[in-house]
View 1 (cartoon, rainbow, N blue to C red):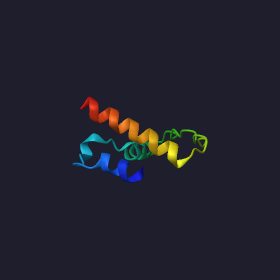
View 2: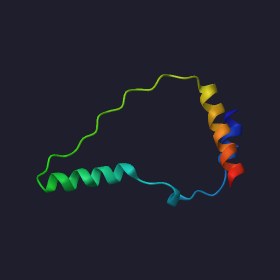
View 3: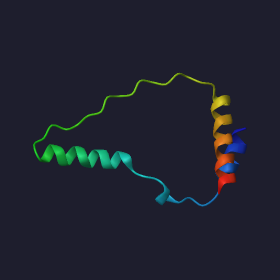
Length: 71
C-alpha cells in the first residue's frame, strides 16, 4: 500500500504550490516585537487521536486518486 501511495505522488515538484506559513508567522512575531507590541501567540493544538497506519495510507490514496481525476 505504501508503494502504491508513493507511485501516486510521482511527478514534478512545484514548490509554488506550497505556502511557508511558519516563516510568515515568525516574521510577524518579529515585526510585532520590534514595534514594542505584545507578540500574538496561538495556543498549541491538542494531539489528535492515534489512528492506524493502514487507515491513514488508505485515506491518502483515496485523496490522491480524487485529485488526479479532477486534474
